[in-house]
Amino acid sequence: MNAPKRNDDGAETANEEQGLATTLKTPPASANDESYSKVIANALKSMSLEERERAYEDIHGITSSTNETPEFLNEKLQQFEAHINERISHKAVYERALRQNEAYVRDPKLRLKFLRCDAFDVRYAAERFVQHFETKLSLFGESLLTTNITQQHLCAEARGVFPKLGSMQTLPVRDTCGRPIVFSFEKYHRKVYVPGKDNVKIQSHLYWWFLMSMTDDDRNCRQGIVYISYGLDFDMSCKTEERQVYWKACMIVNSIPLKFACVHFCLDDRRYRMMMSIISMGLRKSIQSRVRVHFGTQQEVEYSLMSYGIPVDKFPVTYGGELKRTNFYKWMQYQSKREGVSDQQQQQQAVVFAPRRQDVLCARGKNIQNHPGNQLFRETLATHFERYSNAKYSEKPTIMKEIADEMEKSGTQFLVKDESDIWIPASDDQIRDKIKNGFRRKRELDAAARKKQMADEMKKQAKDQARKQREAETTVNHHDAYQSDNSQSSDGGHSLSSKSKKRPRSLNCGMYGETFDPSIFASPPVHPSDDNDDRGCFSLLRRCDGF
Image (cartoon, rainbow, N blue to C red; front, side, top):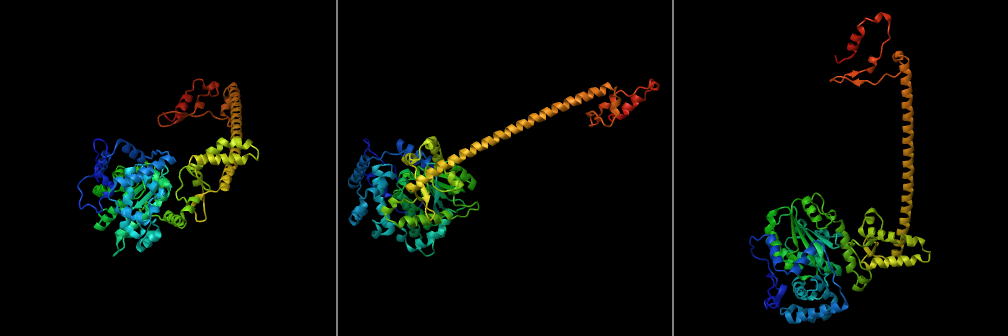
């Protein structure tokens, strides 16, 4: 997989005309000590500045949409056809498929998937399209060359193993950029291997069918997917059969019209750098530049993935490293339902497995209310609430229709769950009920907020009144105590010995915490016989424990 070579005038050399369809069909016998970082660096060096910027934007979720006007699409389709006829010479399998079913091969919807996958780069899209039929022929034979592969077309061993495994799943949520996430648990892939069977064929069939099923949504071809290879607690010292499976997987990735926006390899041992280099060597340059490798424990790897906007809390893995299959069974129901209807019915009623961030979910629950699309929906209703409240009853349906059209123009889709717990587009009546209930809920919340505010104000006033009353009582008590002290001093101090009067507060006296009573300084009763008596001084010293 050498870098594209060009002449001085920018034209492709004859050697490059074979393009990416000449990818190695067998894994290399040996690999040098080149680490995965050097593989990525070499891939970036062979790319143009525009391609590098596009790769970095895809990794970090900065998507730029293309204005797909009818004129633009027709022009690209013509260039696509011209490139296949004039610039690609190794197209024997493509011509065989053309003779078998020309309508299938020339279908504009199929060709647009390849163009969108490669950002309307005609050269790469055409080469991927030709290689698509070559890989499909090697996996499924000539009888299925122009047929969309479903579960019924898989080999018997693959149909029996995959529903019970779930080592590769599509998460029920998307990343922060709205792209689907494919989670591959490498440790459980080995449980698919059937002794005495062609495991390379079994794994290749499953991999092709799973990834091609994601191309049914054109947005996945345009925005791409995030692929996570979860290799923690996994021994990558694989055998020859497993190496062939990995190499077949690379061939499939290079052949299908599915854009890999970013590929994350999660490992807990840095000794597997060599294996990562071998895997990366089998991928296209455009995918090699989008590879990121994370080493560490489960917690360290998850923290690293969170920086790329990936919701790690939805990973189908327990803290003990075991696989969870609940969402996988739901995806199997979703896929079976899609394959059981025709293409026209799919267009009329598109089934959604992982809602996007801007979609509005018509359901109940805290998680539903915290969905970003539902939060945006409530903000939109808040801007129209005053107008809706002041409108007449006959004008309210028009306002609700305007709100629905406004959100749908921005890409928002209203979704409801059917009887099999799968998201489907909501009908017009369901959308109108959702908006009506949203306005009613906002009115109730506003009333509750006003009631709570009034209660808080009344509580605050009661606290202020109680505080002022306590301050007034304290002032009165201080005044009474002052008056009492003055009346006691006017009696000459004789009343200090009365038990009904409160003694003054003791003071701290001495370094060992002794207390000193100021009442001992009160003038004792004066008697004529005590003029020359010094016992009062000794009594004072005895009462001070510090001396």
